[in-house]
Image 1: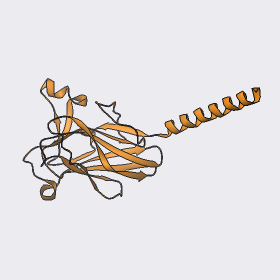
Image 2: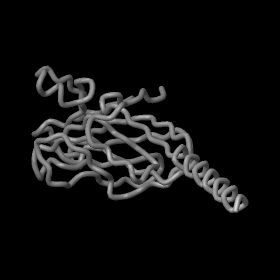
Image 3: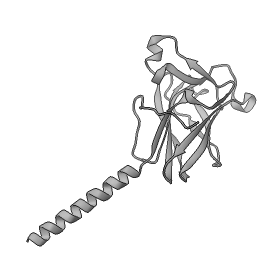
Image 4: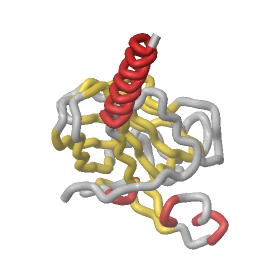
Length: 181
């Protein structure tokens, strides 16, 4: 009887240890959209002056492509970031966004040498919300350029989050970190 109890305790401890190791292996990087290393117009950093509006975003600043600035295929524009991923893995990208309408609700994303993909095209307008990329990206550990490309005007982005935790769902403003230089 003691043998079975000891065996169960050992198996339980081992399972807990393995689950803890698995949980620790997840890499999550959340950063401010305004911390771009390079910005090309019509993408711009905006400091929100209205207190009620500023209180809805992290640190009172965002990047945006103002309504009427023009879509990317005609005018270009981007925000470029450097991200450091500490582990190999499959990653999921989230962005905390505000859309003006159905003609201003998406942007392009490129990470390293991976093909560009589109984020957005959801139907939540004039409200801050998190969107998840429809694709996952397999990446090795290392430093990558992440580029947000202008696709439509009338968009705002507050935070960007990349994670290897497929179960993570951001809800409100997330704790952000500084990006590498």
